Image (cartoon, rainbow, N blue to C red; front, side, top):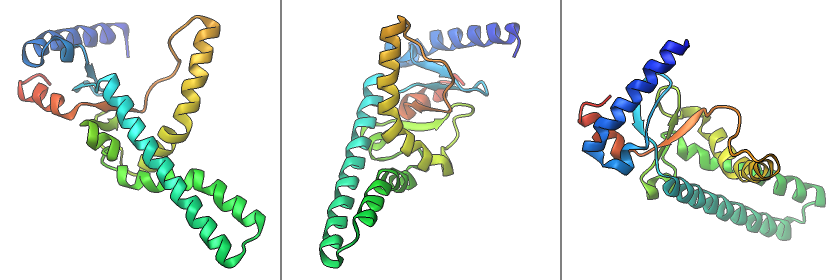
Length: 185
């Protein structure tokens, strides 16, 4: 992508935000963003994203707790070895979010349904699809650790941005549909 293409996209995004302000309001128009393919969407609010993550994390903890209780009941009935119990308990850390991720292929796990958000691919706004299991694993296990690491890094270095790019993004599907219905694509 050349500098001219980048300037053209920024100008297009600024124009779209100005038009969206009349349709969606000033606060929502500020969240209008552009997919990698140039399509426009409305990014979900920070509060909605956090609440969706929190609900998904609570579902993960509940699933992990149910797995531990089931494991202890089996252990009492069959008397499993300590190594087997430890192995199964450790595998629950990964298995529970992966299984929960199976419900996440359309980007709408329980947290997203309750908050009215949807996780989509950043490049084109498409469904997360088969990588949903991985997305849920990252969301429930790696994200908390990453957030702590970024806060420590920001504190120590004095910066507030992280390098890299997002593969997925969280959208507000209702506002995005309203944006597209107004002819702003």
